[in-house]
Length: 245
Length: 255
Image: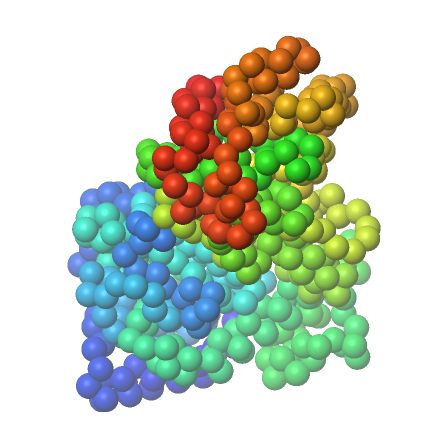
């Protein structure tokens, strides 16, 4: 799947523009993480963090959030292990903020239809004091971090590391990179184009896979399938599978 | 997953069931020793109003939107749908100091959407596991609780005033619950409300074989709060009804 190659390049330009504008852009790389930190925050059940226990709320339904997953077969497009944070880290802010979480994943072994699973997987992390509520097909991510968890050392570095570890456990990923954006609502909203493209690709895949409806003449995602060659190929593949069944 | 204690309150309309539920929620929330989830299962969202809380979204709003999406072929896979419902229900929950409130609302539209109702019930039950005590203010009967809120409750409290008619309705609700298996419950008891003197409570209790949980006194301040539409979260602690609730809390928690 190389649907997002141009978007990855655009994301690089976006990060660079923030750096050039003097905004806080930090690298919190995976290599620096210590295994015991991840163990410390491991839990078996996604927790609820109540408002009165919340230190930081990200992507509340009334604030814009985006969580696109950009998948590519080109390994050189993804800086494996890099975690980039644009804006303040968890202990440096409190209250409610818009939030962007962008995952870049490279692998030669992933099938196109794995994209939906890769998209949903980010919402299934189970970490102490970190509540995730999400609408995967809308890329809406609403999370809360508890005061205690931040006091215990939870940060975007830990979150990025946990995310990478979880994805690598679950899928044949060759390179993965995470970008978090907490700087401002306008910074997150400037990724709306990418957000809408990823959401429409997921919606088109949902329609193909769940409904097995291949009548292009009446499909509202005809534009996406026309623009994205891989979606057309996926459609052909699914049609062949259905004919064989 | 932990299992919170679940209390459902039912009774004939007009006996003060919702006010009693509101005062129980207020009293428990002030103790701050348990996480309380109040579920307003009355289509008229009376409990929300009695607590002075504004509900912007009910579970039935979510249900109806999902049904609409199903009718227009706009749903993703099951995982996607479960995430979406979990997100929406958490968003619908009103978080207040010491407790949270979820309003079920009024179902609209025709048709049987048991699968949707079951998904919603599963999510409410999953959410409930993060609380210690669930208090459900239901409609008169309990069938709706089973159909729209939870499959099981631990304790069913039938609220009644001292009138024969009201006691009779309480007994009928118990009969329906028992005979029709309308809802799974472990215990059932009677809570008498608006009692003027202790002998009145004893007389009313003697007219039924329902186990008596306790009674609350008639209180003119309750009437004033109702008339003026004031939030019962601000109800004075030294009022007779508030004192009566405090005496009932331990028996309720021990149920």
